Length: 68
Image: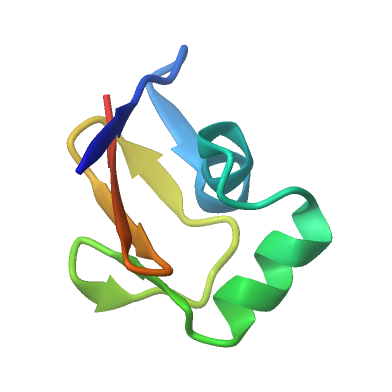
C-alpha cells in the first residue's frame, strides 16, 4: 500500500487519482470510475466526486493507495 498525502481535509476521487499519478487526466479518471475499475474502502465506487478523507483506501489496477 502506498500513502498519498493531501493538503486539505478532503479530496475528490478524480483529483486523488491524478495526484497519485495512476491517472493522467480527468477524462481518464471518469472512464475508469464509470467502468467500475475503482474501489474505495473495499467497495466499488462509481462517483468521480466522491469525497475522500485521510485513512480512506483507494484500489485501482491492483494498486492500493491510502489517503494521508
